[in-house]
Image 1 (cartoon, rainbow, N blue to C red):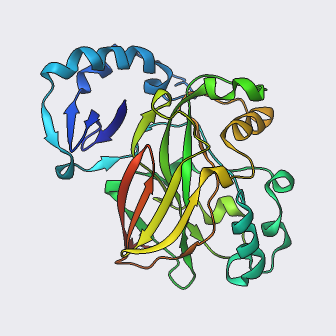
Image 2: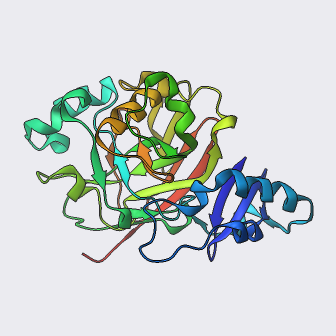
Length: 289
């Protein structure tokens, strides 16, 4: 199933070119008191929500997909985990382009050596919210990535069980300000993590290691690759991350970007597509520094 959040935090089931408003399914979510949990309540109760969605679908209001404002499909992730340089050809372009690596040796290391990093949750936005670009005196680059949404608590996950801990998948855009600062700093401004257009539940993706991805800017192809080219695949990323962090429902792992990263300026329109998930359009605008 494809689940989205839209407009004023409504819950939708995506059915072709329309959305079924199934927001009443959220009524089954438990009520939490302070301190609030470190996980996303919808993802933590996904099976129960999906059961309610199935009951509501026959009578649910249908809304044209193009008429809504799509938000991030995960509303409250505990953390956003990012994988640097996880495609060999991207490593090659990083090594060759000082506009990307800024002469900083640590930015050119293989993922197994550099490890993972975290992005601020406040950087999260949906496709309909667009990207608000800041520090326009520097390059602001696009990076398309497969996003993995964790479905249950996980620690030291064995490789052969890794997919069992996934709730679903989405498209991620990891926007990046180029410069010498640490990655998490340059990649965490507001709206610099786009997640969307919806979450596709795990059962709909037979093999996350065989997905085609494309990113276009103003209609021109910039990035095109397959997740089979990942250095650390989906299973390996879940295993690797769970050795260092406890993973919670709603945590997001963005799996790394292929070659072809490039600048985006205000007025540009990005179109990102991953097979089995769908496509989303993101508009870039100038923001206040």
